[in-house]
Length: 363
Image (tube, rainbow, N blue to C red; front, side, top):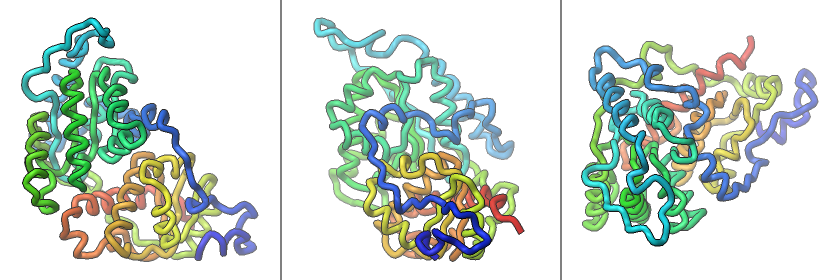
């Protein structure tokens, strides 16, 4: 059942139909991309002391200790000077040794919580710190251009990059070059990923020059391993089974600020919206209701869905759905392929949002 067939709705539903994501075509100015490089709403209030280490995983406690010290060490003057360079000033010497930390670990061990806590703990004004996903960083370069992105970020004390993933050799070269420029300017780096720096791209590309770029990126970071199981499944009930189409539709009509779309139409719409705009696509939504959820048909569609899942998770938007369970969205070939980490992350996050949506359904 699509939103167009439910707009008037059964007689028991209100006259006002839910919103439709398929009706949204957001246009995001470049300035907003820069201003929004802060921890997402889900991580507004996180701090090191709100991170609860698993007592069976000492690496989690150690990570808090190391990152707290790293944040404290960023409290002095910018490594390249106390302010913007003047034309007559000599170029500051490049810092020696790694200028960043790299948080490596599996899904749901709290890497993003720790990265956001580092951002909050770093003693600098918000405009001197930047926080974004790898995709958001490449989108920023696309919007501003390489040189303007370097100029925009070069006076920052810290750049945090969440979910550092290399899906394309071109992106590898782009980000490697960008980080090298920022390190030269004294910007400290912090990143999360599910793969050690030297293993990025493994199983995707074998080109010699690609691996050379990987090694260049590795030199910028000290790897910090964080062990543990996915906290979203630690001691929590199994993900709720999908609801009926009628239950999802009724919940959408009964929830102010909710959207209602059938899943195949939404996937088609995502192909028409640049992923950098998926955050704006979800602006002001209180819930996303989906009918007819089916396995995604191809890898390009699957990767777009991953980005949407990330934006919904960042913004804590519950997802209520009918159709197949979220752990059946991706084929076995996809889950065994080079992008498997992305797909498992999407399943984990959508499952968490499905739990959050249970209260929207009333018996």
